[in-house]
Amino acid sequence: MAEATDKIFEARKLRYEQLQQNMRSANELQGQYGRWLIASLLLVHGGSILLLAQSPNMITTVLPAVYWWHVAGLVLALMCGFAAWANWNYHVVLYDNVSPAMIYDDNEWPKFDPKVQTKIGRTHWASISLGLLSGACILGAAICGYAKMGLPSAP
Image (cartoon, rainbow, N blue to C red; front, top):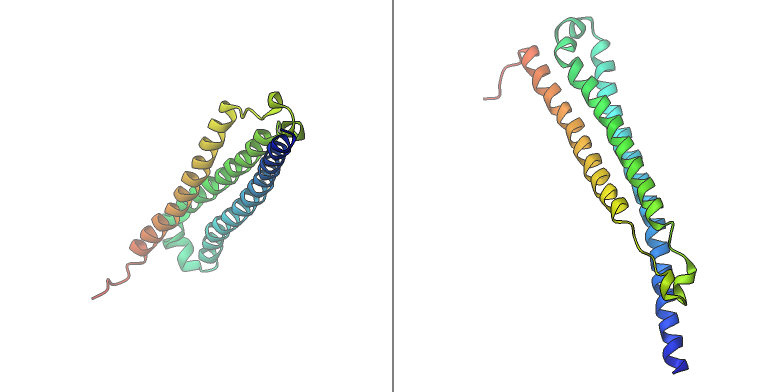
């Protein structure tokens, strides 16, 4: 009987350690994802405006056509970053109630809050959607800029 109890405690200990590792991994991955995505989107949108502003001809012809695409892209990228940050914070909140006491006490087994889990799902998809919309603004600006430049189409 004592051997079975030891195995149960060992299994619970492993589960606790797995939950703690999941928390650390979620924190790290969300942070890396958010930083990379936001930096890339901000760089493309901001760099595009800056590049076009370097040419007097582009300022009068192309920049007015693409400006709001890039401004919208910048705003969406910042909103994406906020959603990713919120998602990361909800993961931290989710794992807050994981306690080592779960190893030996059934009443201490974590009960993940369904409301927090819903918020994790929503902010996850919000950050993805906002990032994709920001990326779509790059395409919209490219199409508008191409049309304004009046370049010949490919044969």
